[in-house]
Image 1 (spheres, rainbow, N blue to C red):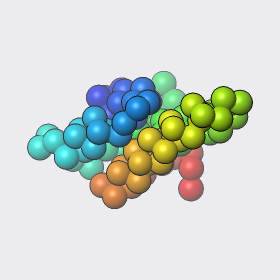
Image 2 (image 1 turned 90 degrees about the vertical axis):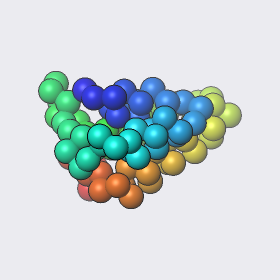
Image 3 (image 1 turned 45 degrees about the vertical axis):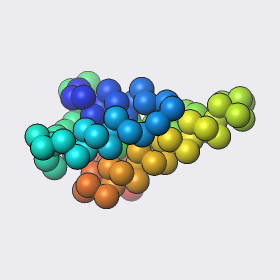
Image 4 (image 1 turned 90 degrees about the horizontal axis):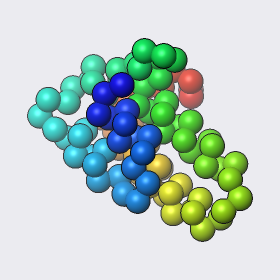
Length: 88
């Protein structure tokens, strides 16, 4: 895991920290697409998995708010060249 993996998985109220990490001077395509060791997920994979799990919940208000944040995160990562190994 790197900081982008963590922020992608746990940012619930805003995409700001993910965007800040993506725009950081030390962030490059290797950081954006780094695969974590256990399952090989990239930060974008983490976002897609989180979205899928959220869409299965029954709390519609929570889902709507958090879903918006996750879509913002996904779009930000895609704009920086992020790739997914599980979502094509």
